Structure formats: structure tokens, C-alpha cells
Image (cartoon, helix red, strand yellow):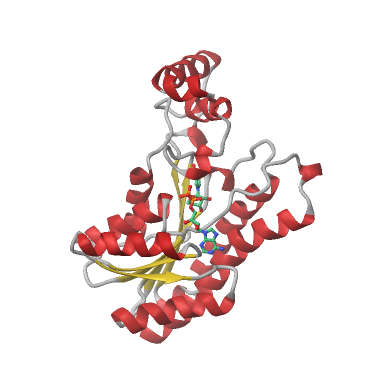
Length: 275
Ligand SMILES: NC(=O)c1ccc[n+]([C@@H]2O[C@H](COP(=O)([O-])OP(=O)(O)OC[C@H]3O[C@@H](n4cnc5c(N)ncnc54)[C@H](O)[C@@H]3O)[C@@H](O)[C@H]2O)c1
């Protein structure tokens, strides 16, 4: 029960990583606000957490709207009395185009959701945490794409690099109030819609670069978020926790890359066969 009695809001919790984080937090005793633009999805996750004996409410919101960010914090306080943990998880994958082909509207949308959203939600949460005078923890979900480049992802990667800078500045600005801010930076996660949108031929090299020739699971990434949210990480702030199977630390050899890709393709033969 590493989050017993804590109240946590998770943005983008209607599916994917956000849902897994919310479920893990609930299993560790947290009371959850399932915050998402997808009202039906958020409601289904909250209902399911409650059916498992947890405490959760669904809250429809758009991270790009300041009033929605404030209302999310107010919903946590109204339902559970406080807000102790915020996970800035909601994001979009962006244009996935060459830098010369990203139009201004796509660029703005990616920045709005992926960077302005975490800024607005953090501002609202920090104001409440400061008032509570009992510390707090903010976990940002960035990406391996927040520290490295990817082909045709300039908008997404710039936004995820920005998230790292935002988290570090919040860690500094909020130090006097005992509010910690940290980042989890996953590589591709199996089973998520974001990955499903990726061409399978592009996924094999991602997997091959890891020490384990596979993608991460959302549960492995949620474990890192749980650690950073909990008091076990009481002396950790401004950190970027890579959950990337070692990609950031290693340059695989040609043999490791080709064998890793072959292993990944063999394990995912059915999926690759369909495309
Ligand atoms: N999937 C991957 O392989 C991968 C890899 C590295 C990092 N990440 C990061 O992990 C996080 C979660 O990724 P995922 O794959 O679970 O994503 P996903 O697309 O499956 O889910 C994103 C959720 O965010 C919600 N959302 C989108 N825009 C919103 C808005 N404006 N306001 C509120 N909610 C909104 C969606 O409705 C959805 O429920 C993201 O920050 C993503 O950048 C994902």
C-alpha cells in the first residue's frame, strides 16, 4: 500500500499507459481521478477500479484548457478531500511527418496537448498542493523521444524534450513546498494504440535496440511512475527515469541489431504476417 490515503489524478487514464498507472495506484491504496477527454473510456476505467474494491471517479477534461485543469483538481478535492499526486500522461503522437511537411496546425496541436497540457495541469495541482502544505508529487510521462531524436517526429520529440525541461523547472520552483517533480521516459510500449499506429516494420528496430529485443509493457512503465509518486522516492526530484530497456545507455552492434530484430519478428510473426 505504497500510496495509502493519497489522492492522485492521472490525465489520459481512459486507456493505455494512463489506465495501467491508475489501476496500479488504486491497488496501492490511492484514490483516483481518471481524467480524460474520452468521457466514456474514463467512466469505464473508474467503474472497473471500483468493482475491484478501489476508489475512483471519472472526470471529463481537456488538458489544453486551463479551466478544465483547475476543475480536475477541484473534482479530486470535492470527492476525496485533497490532491497529492498528479501524473501528466495524456499526449498525442503528432504529425509523424518529415520536418518540412509538418504544418503549423499539427505543430500547435502537438505542443498544446503534450506540453501546454502538463504545464496547465501542474499549475493547478501545485496551487492546491501548496495550500495543503503537505508536499506532493508530480510525475511527467515523457519518452525516449524526449531525450533522443526519431525520424519524422520533430513535433512529438520537441514536445517530449520540453516536458523534461518543464519537470526540472517545476522541481526547482516548488522545492520550498516539498513538491517533487520527476519524469518517466519509456521506449515503445506493447499493446498501446500509439504503438499500433506505428508501421510494424518500424517497430522491430525499436525493439532490437533494447537489451531484451522487445518493447516495454505498460506495467513496467507504471512501476516506475508508482515509485516516483510514492514516498520511496522522497529524495528524488528533477530526475528522468529511463524505462527503455537500456537503449539510452548502449549502442548495439550490427549483430545485436539484426539478431534482435529477427527475434522480435519471430515472436510477433502473426502480427507481421497480417500486414
Ligand atoms: N505508446 C508508446 O509506445 C509510448 C512510448 C513512449 C512514451 N509514451 C507516452 O506515454 C503516454 C501514454 O501513451 P499511450 O500510448 O498510453 O497513449 P494513448 O493514445 O493510448 O492514450 C492517450 C490518452 O490520452 C487521452 N487524451 C488525448 N488528448 C487529450 C486531451 N487533450 N485531454 C485529455 N486527455 C487526452 C486520450 O483520450 C487517451 O485516453 C503519452 O504521454 C505518450 O507520449 C508512449
